Image (tube, rainbow, N blue to C red; front, side, top):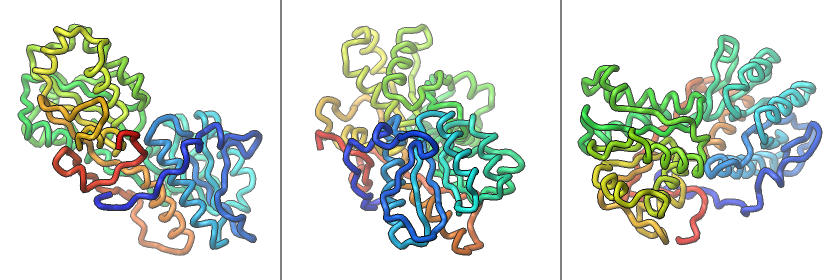
Length: 360
């Protein structure tokens, strides 16, 4: 993503409401001209339920428009409102496999396992993006699992925390996204680095405590943070570190720390004990905090704050992998991992965020 000029966002009105129709075409859109005889390539993503998935949807639309223009394939985007909706969309596609060239899918969650297995059993080429669901038949048939380096996000976060002084006497509050493979890998990477530094599993379990799933939601993240803050688990006599799985969650915490909902006395003590706040993805608003241009939240001086990249435009690369396969390319890596970078106040100008922030 470094120094890359990401495509501009579509207008804000490109939302799930605009995309979701009825019947078998629910959530379907095609920004390009309908191809003459070209088989369909389906890009299947969740609807825009938060900033990152909203950006994925936008980039998917742009890719569909670009690829459909040459008429070789009819590329459609399907935005699912929930698990059941995505399952129905897949079932509808599989009812006419003669016209289906391939599927690129970001599974809504792990509830899609049997549905992904249906795609595999139907011998329809498919690429999984971001969330990876595994089983024997899926692993055998999937063209590629295209994702950012989720394990690397956790690994780089732990590496930064250790460099900043994390010890076995401290407390790490890990705020997870959901219960899919993504948080599992981020947690695994975090633990991997600590293990490499000589930490035992028992020592890690004592220091690192996970939240309930935030659903990648700013509001839910804020609620969970404030509940934790008000509990006895939040011990300001220890050095505290927060490892969030998404910039939206981190923004919820920053809003809470800059608001009036928390006890002011404990908040002052907590800020003195807070050593680091980590997040990931590349949201424009968090970059505004990092570069000091945010309207209401100043760049923190008392603790380290950084975000690890996880570019939503990777959906375009996932689609290009599918097209390469359909065009006969044979040297595609099944485990297709895109590297990450740590972004902070010193290097934020070298990276392009996704979305917009009105203060910039």
